Image (cartoon, rainbow over all chains, first blue to last red):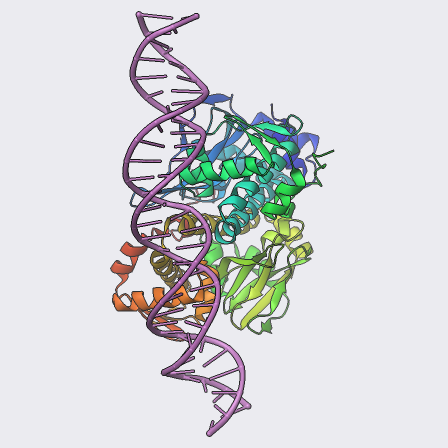
Length: 242
Length: 242
DNA sequence: CGAGGTCTTGAAGACGATCAACAAACGTGG
DNA sequence: CCACGTTTGTTGATCGTCTTCAAGACCTCG
């Protein structure tokens, strides 16, 4: 259940047995959340952090006038609000985009762990920095890619990240979000998301049904999206086309 | 010279005398850079990190086709590439936007420091998380604000951050960038930047000459930009464990 | 005082939003 | 298993914002 998380954590140098055991022991029993449930509210000051075990959730910044922007999407194995451990007040909310399974750790426990095991602290820091790098990539996506490229980039990123933690099924993966939800991610109207999906299908790049995405032409997608996965800090991902 | 940095660092709980002395001792002598010089190249694997002492620099993500996007602007006291300390390969370049004064620390020294002083590690981690929160704010700005609001938000953010480290002169501050440069930040063409600046002036919100910005109507700017500075984490964070 | 960079303004065009209507899929209860 | 209501997906038409192209004015610094 914690495998995806441990895999990500190991990327920055595998934790020792003691470190791993101490960390896992600190987690509270898992909970299950419905799609749409709020995990953390903007401006709150949480005393625990949340690890996502299954499903998708997102970070939502709300503006004064009620407009909202998703700033990140998280999947199984992601520490959804580790930054809350070092930051004081939350600058955004965290919401479940699909039904989710989560486990939490008290900040007091994290504090003890990180002061006892400096290398563990560094590994956790690393995870938050990958999030930051992903933010930067999204910034360039919003700034420099048109709607079609954004759609292709999302598919590339999701496939790569899911594949990394073993959550793909060949060239397929499950992505149970509505087109309106995708619009929140890509910052497009739901009407335009529909046209983008239609176009990606028409180009023979993906098969994107209600809840599943299948990669049909990985090189084509990568080229269209100008996908360059350095920012994800993964080991080289095997080419799904072979 | 290090005051702005120390002020930011202290926000997460002031470092002890020993911590502060050890940290400052690790910096190499300062260097001066010209506007346009590259501090770090995308995809490199640096062995030191850079602290900005004066001037402005930015983080630049380059796409395969040569398009570029500024993903962050840094000012005096900002640790420009602290994330390179925990991340492997750089996912972006760092360039001087104006002439800059910098100081560097070897990663090996940082590693020793953070393993000796876990609380110092936490303070540095905090700084990188403020950067991440700022990325999120920019994401919502690109996604949900129109050109005029983006301009107003940039002015609000710059004023607030510069004021925090004592680099404002009353309602004025120095911002020696061309309108084309501002366009790179706001993700607007230089033509449209010009129209935004003109509009902000016409509304009596700012006086924005070649190299200086003066705030004329702060409440008006804040309202237009929907500026909500929680993400900058300028309130001191209570640290119960100290 | 000349030259190159920067700022300013106009006009045309592209991209995506919004509005509106309808079709298809889902799920819930009878 | 079907009926019906709700959510989600699909398509067309119009509109607004920002881009691009083009040209001229203004600095600033050699």
